Image (cartoon, rainbow, N blue to C red; front, side, top):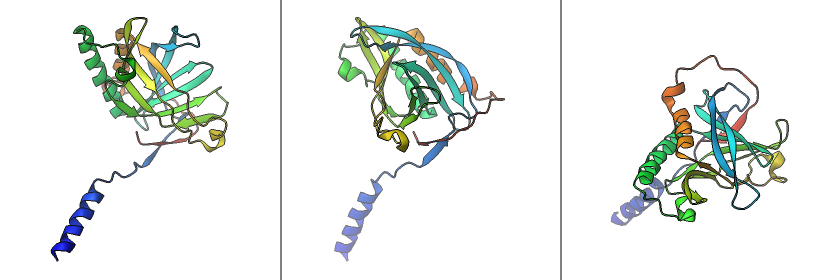
Length: 217
C-alpha cells in the first residue's frame, strides 16, 4: 500500500508540472480597429553599420485587446501584434533601461543585452503587398538594448519562427528576423500608446473584413 501511494505521488508531481498548450484565439486583421498614432524607430539597412529611420503606425484592435505595430521594411509590410501582458512587459523594461541609462550602467554586450529585459511571444503577419499572400508566425520577441554607432538604443528583436499559413509555408517558411532600435524619446512615445488608460474608453471604430487565427500570447 505504501508502494502504491508513493507511485501516485510521483505521477501527480509529474502531471502537475505539465504546462498545457494555450488555447487559440481569433484576431480580425481587417476588422474593427483604430489608429492611436505614429512612432519612429531605426532599422538596419542592407549596408552594414547603417540604419534608417522608419515610421510605425500604431493601431488598437478592441475585440482582442491587442495593439498592432504596422511598418514596412525591405519591401515587406509587417503587422506585429502586442497583447496587454506583452505591452506591460515593454513598459516595465523601458523603465529599467532608463534607470540603467541614467546610472550609466549599460555594458556593451549586444548578444546578451538584446534580451536584457526578457522575451515575449508575439504574433507577426507579413506580406509583400496589401493584396499579396500573407505569412503568419509566433516569434519570440526579445526586449533589451543594443549599441549602434556607440549609442545604446532600446531594442525590440523579432526572431524567426515557422510560418503557420499553409498556402505560403513552402515559399516563405519563416518570418524575417529584424530589430527595431529606439531612442529614449521614441520608446517613451510607444510606451504612451501601449498604456491601456489611453484607449480603453474609445469607441466608434471602423469595420473591415477578414479573420486570422493566432495563438494566445
